[in-house]
Structure formats: structure tokens, C-alpha cells
Figure 1 (cartoon, rainbow, N blue to C red):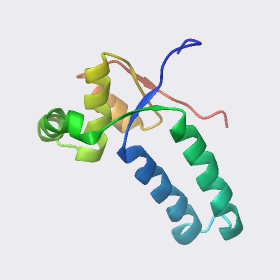
Figure 2: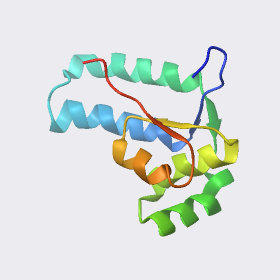
Figure 3: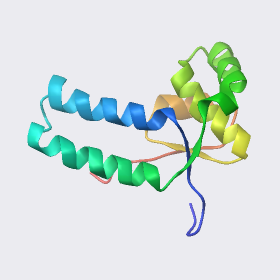
Figure 4: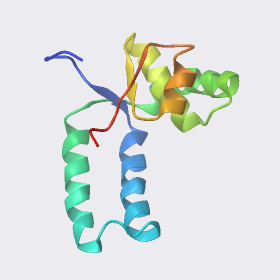
Amino acid sequence: MKRGDSLYTVDVALSEGLNVIWKHAILLKDLELEDVNSAVEDLTRVYDGLNVIRAREIADESMQVAITQKITVYDSMYIAAAQKMNSTLYSADQKLCACANQIANTKVLKSKE
């Protein structure tokens, strides 16, 4: 990515992110309950800074990708969005990137651990 590039996501990203926070707080118990509100604030701040593509705009394309690639519609939405924007899909999900690479440009994000 270059400075000044526009960042896009699909509208389900917020729900998926909130679900990850819930999972870490309730199921994995590696996020303290008193830190949940702060995590939600950080997530929504990032989400608010993104250009959001409505799922309805890419519904047909998402379903086609999901069926042909045999992946969830949730995952296929990110691929369909990258196709729609004629852009690169950035994800830390290596499996998604491997699947998407057959259809769109992808880059796997790596943690700095």
C-alpha cells in the first residue's frame, strides 16, 4: 500500500470484528471484560475511517464467488469487493488469500510478532 491509497471494506466487517472481540472476551477469555469497551471504540474508529461497500452492491458477485470457490459468503464478499474496486485484497487470512489469488490480487498481512 502507498500513502494516500483509499481503504475499502464491506459492511459486514464491523459485525465480524465485534464478534471477534466477543469471542476473545467470552470464549477464549484472553480479553478482560473491562477492556471490551475500549476494543469496540478502537474497532469502530478504524471502521469509520474506511470506505464501506454495502453487501447489497456485491450480493450477486459474492454468491458466485462463494459457489465457485466453495467458501462462505462472508469471505467471498471481500473477494467480490476487491474485484469491484479492481484493487488488491489485503488479509491476514492466508487461506482466504490463497483462494482469492485465483480471482483477484491479494497480499497476506503478517503480524510483527
